[in-house]
Image (tube, rainbow, N blue to C red):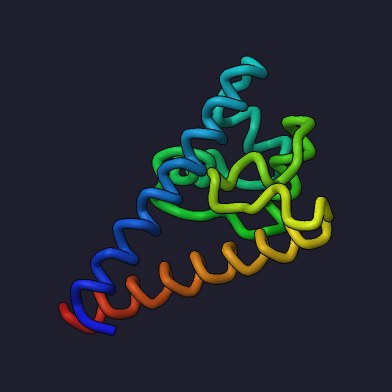
Length: 120
């Protein structure tokens, strides 16, 4: 895997985080809530909601579940079109796929953060 591949993965990761943040913002706006109100409902700080919405951070899976519950939706809603919705028609497969994607995004974020710290 070359440098160009890493850059492409980083672009995809940023794109996915941005899309997730856009969906969180859209759902929050539909409810008419402020970031502070949503933060209180899901048990995080307001700044965390701001970071999620701007695509700077990815919420942990347990926070994703609380967000989905607050918005009366499922976790899949936050993951653009990368989640296969028709595989065998099983919610379990989608849940496993979501967890795999989520773990991957968190791993890449930590790796990029670590590499940025080493280069300084």
